[in-house]
Image (cartoon, rainbow, N blue to C red; front, side):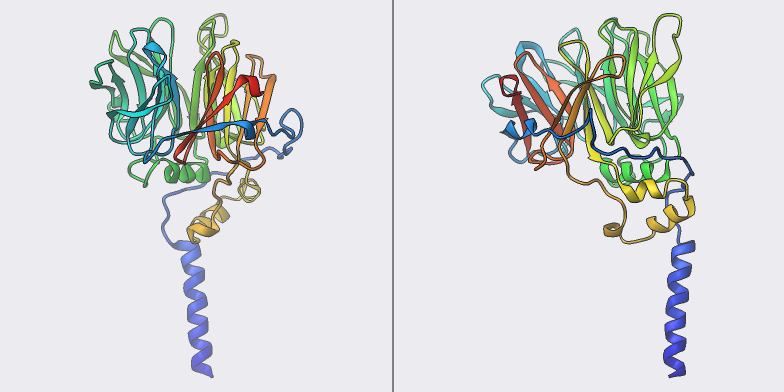
Length: 361
């Protein structure tokens, strides 16, 4: 019996030491998570996304972002590194292999496409499908998680690097790296201004907790930034008396904001890729416990719960439209690309691109 107790004691001691001392990649930082108000107005009940139909992508998955190219064709990034072209009549074809994990995409004034590739950096794709790497390092430091991109009227490119610590390729992909960065809350994200004509790049906003979607206002005066790990949207002034300053536009969102895209009306679309996680919020000011949780099996750690939720805001942060699907048929929506007659619903996973006709709103 003594031997049994000794064995049991040794096992317990091993588990305790493992939970307290086993190396993990995160070094959590304490912070005060805002009290989750839940899905109340202006984010209350809605089911209009349930009316969306699917564009089948075949073997390709994860249409993270979409833009329109010359001639009206749509271009979607995908998980396997393929840039997809969606013809006006609905056919989907592989346009070019970009390698890595392309995420945000925008069309430039010359008809080329600019992609934020999480494994590579900024890429430009011309109409003949030639690919050029525009930028893969800033200040001598390689880019490890380029995320979203926005292009100003004068050709200046703004893009987010979600994390400078948890590289998407190094840590097993964009999703795995995002979980680490959000669990640590170490302010490793930043937004970079790149001037292709001069070949110069500079950081304009840093110390962000998972820098994600970026979009420029129609008047070119400010940039919106999704700070995913802090549940908020920031407004960074590019012009005017407040140029260079960053303020909180909308805070305490009921989920994790992902892409930000310009709306036809002049506002912005935001995707809530997942709802808030109660355990993650409870552990916000308990860095030691977050480190212990990180040592647990992956199935016991906080993860993104499937949901389908997007909303539109104006430049003052007022919510203009709130769209949800309680059944989450198109789950983990990263955002919306709006055309004259439809909303295209981009997503983190899945082999379909959702499309909601405006007539069905």
